[in-house]
Image 1 (tube, helix red, strand yellow):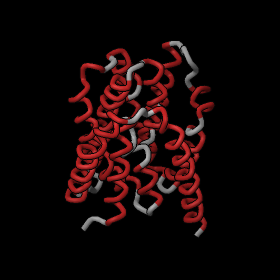
Image 2: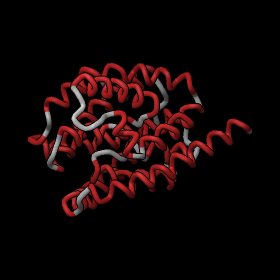
Image 3: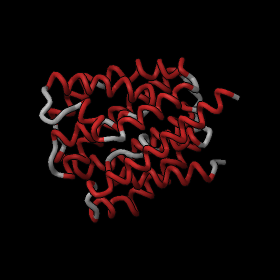
Length: 243
């Protein structure tokens, strides 16, 4: 049977992804690791759920996709994700600490602006996309950088959501293929339940919230929440290492 805490987290982060285009991987991964679940088990739960939500968003807003940004991500981000996942396999418990530190610093706008300043050149953009692929493969948190990249190239919220979702799909397909090829253990029944819960949250609540709310007004609260989660994750993992 699937634990109630997993169901609750998936439901919550699916609503976040409905509004921001990211959430199931970005927030769900550290939250579930904070609850004590191993990294690759968490991936088997969050990746399929995020994939289904992203597909639904793309099917709804595909006319708004930014092809320039999608092509850049395909060239400079996707090939690097498997390399990051190989690193994650060697890092073990250290993944949580790296994840927490990265999340904390990138939750501040000044850090993201240093990484990708306004009106950055295409060369700088390509470097950031490369870095994003490595981070996403290692920690599942490329979604922390992705909104800043998309915001620079997209204006309408529909364009931001569609472009973020289609790049996320490329992330997810790459990661799911890696897990299947490497034959990491996957509990298909738990994954299926997470997909159902996540899609229900998106279809019943998330879509309506996206139409009603301006995501910019909620960014501050999301960032604050991420900082708290990141600090708790680092403290939890350091404590476990010392035991």
